[in-house]
Length: 379
Image (cartoon, rainbow, N blue to C red; front, side, top):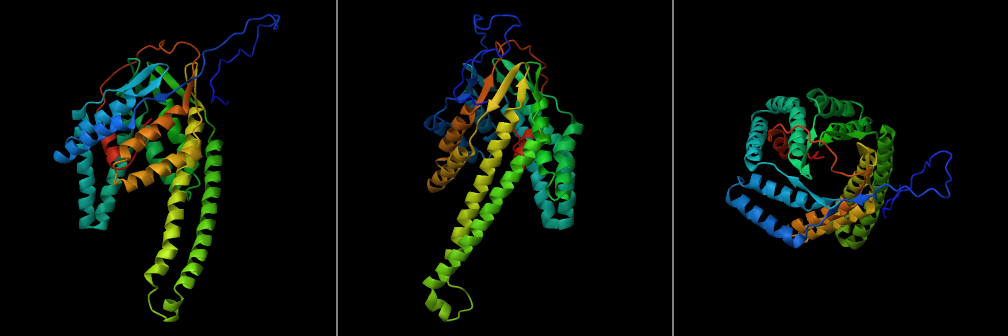
């Protein structure tokens, strides 16, 4: 369904026996888009203060910085006139980060002692990582709210081990042919175990669509490999022509100009290829997941465009590089503004008719360890 311009939806099933010509139009509520109201300059002030205090306190303030960052982005994300909110406690996050740093330091120290010791420590960390990742989702959703109601995550530990340990091992054992299946189960685990105000989300995306996405991504990757091969050939010919004298001297090492002429185009193509594949898979999977997600009678949808996402990601990376990192807060706001604008909801009625669910406290250890080990699975 194309909902770039949301409109009221007519009831497709008029009452049997009625005169459809005189039946008044039955309209459902209009689809509403999520929006982001933050500004780069405004967030830059928060970001620069967070950075300065984190450096001054040798990283201790990073927990408070994270809360300020998430609260800014949550509170500037709006749906149907209301904003989201984040309630995480800095002390809880700091405790989680201490545990994360301890595990990371243990792994680093084990690597110095022996590769076998490092392998054993890595295996031990992997054995608890599914539980930590599950706690990460619980902590993040428990501390997220909309219109005063908290989100919840109820995924079991056994399901976490299946999604975060056994399926990754299966993916490697199958030479990555099971990768789309794993990705499907990951999104399913995230969505079906989430709830808002006691009402669970539902997810019915077919696994075949994930395989189609990765098949198309493989074709795109193959195209880039061909392009890199052509680029290497052209760069080599050009470099030889430009350095004929040096080549004629039969030096043992190729001149730096030759190496640069060959390597620079390859690195540029590789960088663009990685960003392109990431944008393509991210856009397709996000759209696929949210277009097959509901909560009660309410439907979600997403129309993220891979080309637009690629352009924003690429231009953000270039601008951040040339400003020595100072453009980063503007880049984050720019990406958030586009990403939220492509997510919409088709409500079947008022959004405040949810019953509040439980609000048991969840510790922050899982989220912080997962983040430290470069796992970003936020719902």
